Image 1 (tube, rainbow, N blue to C red):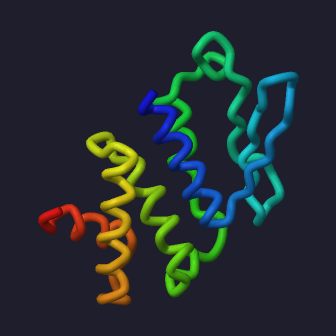
Image 2 (cartoon, one colour):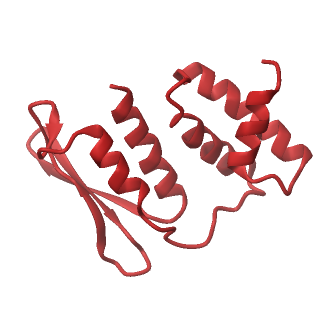
Image 3 (tube, rainbow, N blue to C red):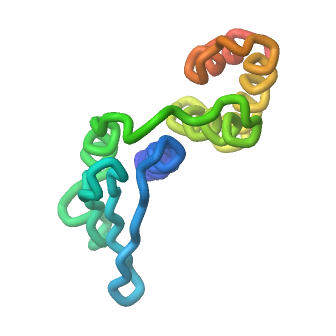
Length: 134
């Protein structure tokens, strides 16, 4: 189950960085296409779930394919606190050692650190927040 949470978090991160997610319904299931707005082409397609897998692909293979995508456009506006929090949370949810509540707490602490130091990149803010006593 955790692998699928990582896939969802990575898809959220890609969406925040400019990619578009387009679902295509098939009855009760959906196929999701990840569209690069720069080219308009489908960069990755996540097939319908069938028998615990997605078109013969398991969560680690899906995650590897999604993580290999290059940035779609300009980086997110890190001056927007809500957007920065969403970026931090999506990055924190990718950590196998954290649960959902722990990831949210870590993202809150990283947001405070980012507000104090505007030059701190989101991954560095998360690492710094991990080092702080929680």
